[in-house]
Length: 408
Ligand code: S3P
Image (cartoon, rainbow, N blue to C red):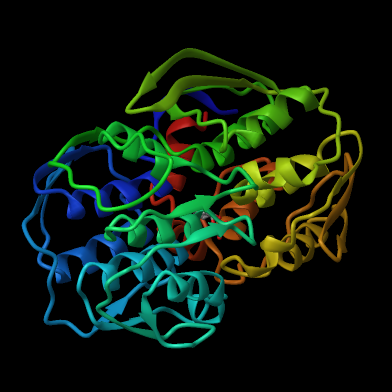
């Protein structure tokens, strides 16, 4: 069983954003509980190449920003889609010329969703649909743009560029994707609905625990007999808690408490107990947007719930770090789940006893961690898989350490 109370490192999405805003600020910023994952390190490395001084200690990161400038011509985004898309807006609008590149998986992910509207905004970007993409320092103009795909990365990239222009931009998000950028801007004193030149001083920020990483621990606790855990100081932003809301509806014993607002974000503690009566329900498009990164681990939970569940409107899953629809279905089938691929989603019928299986990670961190939890459920014991441990560093380096800490 899993038992005990833990804290998680800071949310990855917020960590990328506060680092970039600290680079745009004049003076020193301090960030507490920044995510320690590889993706966020990519953003940090690029900023350091652009004359941003970053002093790291265990508990706090200090960032000193004077002027964004760089002699470097190439910038490595590794596996991080958020780094690539946010930097495409940030770097050229801040006077940098160069080329962004990434690893094999990132080099296949679509970039025109962000480069096209950025070009409309006046950013000089080569026409490539995928990385590597070159850009020249640019003076952004303005744009009145409604998102065409549910992507907070696209929205944020446009906002970052628009904040360097004298002219006002309007960016509309009909999908209600994660809104951390807008909330950080409010904290920094930007209350306007339109985006244009915005100057601000260095700031302090305490990043709440990563809700997407929490979903792995929450699911393990719900499925492993006699578990009873508490995760403290977790982000509880309404654009990110689709997973918690759905789990409550399905009958998972999950309780939130100590709700408060910090830095314009809602934060709380989450308690989860082993749950024996979980029932499957269908997900709609809006649910999918608010739990897009949690779908792999959700699929595992659904294999253990009663009834049939259909996830639809999840096309975006096909263009994540892997084709997650294929990767989920392939692996959970190996574990004996009753699961099928749909064009834009997945159908799962439960509950089905899982048996150990050899898995394929598809080099995708969230698929790997999902299958690590599936293995614990199937084998009824805790073993560390070295490949999964390595992949977990992309987004959740503390993954195995925390499960080991809770496992009794
Ligand atoms: C993120 C947005 C989402 C999410 C990703 C992080 C962000 O991607 O899947 O893990 O920090 O803005 P999309 O913008 O592609 O939906």
